[in-house]
Image (tube, rainbow, N blue to C red; front, side, top):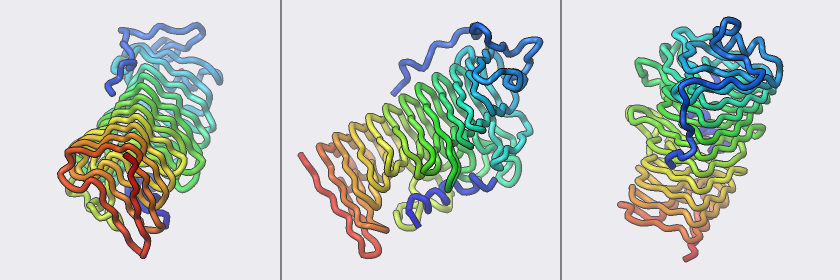
Length: 369
C-alpha cells in the first residue's frame, strides 16, 4: 500500500467512519452590514442558518458581534462576514447533528458551493465521547465545495472532557478519502487547539492553498498541523507548532516502517512547501513522492527536522536548528533520493543526516554547499 495512504488510514483513524499574523485583522465591536446583506441577528434572521436558508445564491450575510450556538450547513454560493475573529463566533451546540459524511461538523459546505468566510470564529468544544457524538470537524468542505477562509479563527475542535480518541477531530477538513473533491484557500487565520489535525486536504481531486496562518496543536494529545493526503496545493509562510506524538497514543513511535510520526506539515507529490516556520513538532516536514521544499525554518523538532520518504526530493535553503536530528531519507517501497541544496543544519543533538532502508530499497542523500 502507498505509505501515505497507510499513514492516512492510521492517522485519521475513525475520521471517515464516523509568523505572527500582521494582517490577522483588527476586530471592530460590531460588523458593518454591506449593502443588500442579510444581518444576523435581526428580527427576520435570528440565527446564522436562518439567514443562510433565506439568502439567494451569491448573497451576503453579516454577523454582528455575538455567539451563535448552532451548526451551519451551506449548499449555495455565499459570503459570511463577522465583526472580527473572537467577536462573532459560531459555537458548537451541546448536541451535534451528524452530517451526510457521518461526521459531526460545526460548519458544513457541499453541493459545489463557493463560500467566503471572514472575520469570525468557528469554535468547539463538543460534548460527545469517543464512541458517540464526538465533534468531527470545525469546518467541513466536500462534494466539490470551495472554502475561502480569511482573517478568521477555528479553535477548540475537540471534545470535553478530552478523551483519548486520537485524531478524531480536525479544524478544517477538505475532500474525502480515498476519493472526493473539495478545495480551499485559507489565509491569515488562526487554527488552534484541535484533537486531530489543523488543516487536512484529502484525495487527488482536492486542492488547498494555505498561506500566512498560525496552526498550533496542543501538548496533551497527538496532533498534526497541515496535511495533504494525495491532494495538491501549497503551504507557504505559515507558523506551525506543537504537533507531536503524545503518550499514550498506541500508534506512534520512531520506526518509519511500522509507527506513525506526527508532523507540522505532511506533503506529497503536487504540494509546494516554502517559507514556513515550524517549531516544536515531532517532524517539521514529512514529505512523500516528489516534493521540493524551500526557505523553511525548522526549530526544535522532537525527532527530525525534515523526513523524506519513498521518492525524489530537493530541499533548497531550508534551515534546521536545534532538536534531535536533521534530515531523514527513508526508502520503504521505492528507492529514495534527496538533494540538499544549501540546507543549513545546526545544533541538533543527534544525526545531521540519517538514512533508513527496507525491502532492499536504497536511500541516498547528496549535498550542495
